[in-house]
Length: 46
Image (cartoon, rainbow, N blue to C red; front, side):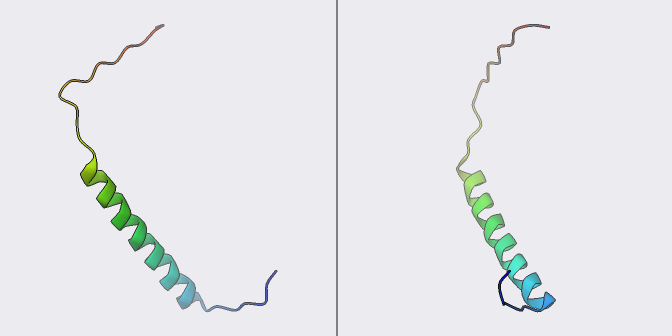
């Protein structure tokens, strides 16, 4: 273990900052995705 102490408020703030950055990068990624005009799906079996 390491000798670092953090309050629960600090841990919460860091977690919220990371979650916000993930949300921003996810929204930027979803804007670049496009839907195909036609989607063909092939399946074997059943």
